[in-house]
Length: 73
Image (cartoon, rainbow, N blue to C red; front, side, top):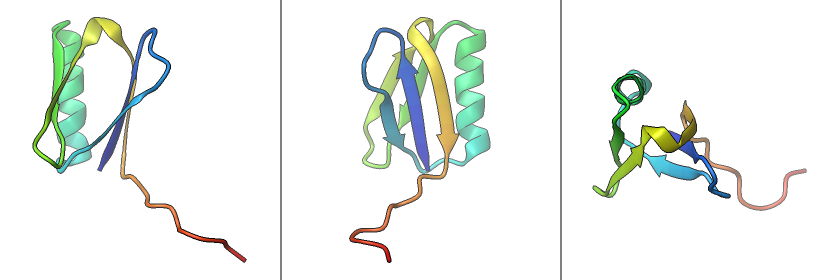
């Protein structure tokens, strides 16, 4: 599943592929925001991503849809 995180004063959003379900990711983000802490997510390659909630602009949680390669007719 794909998670997009917008960070204040950053031109690009952070896109993370995670193996967790939507409810689990949403719980991690809401708990971190409520405690004014750090969002901690682990991607599908085992890398840990930390984002301070003070810099959080938005979080978009959804199932990443792979685009088709080539031309459509």
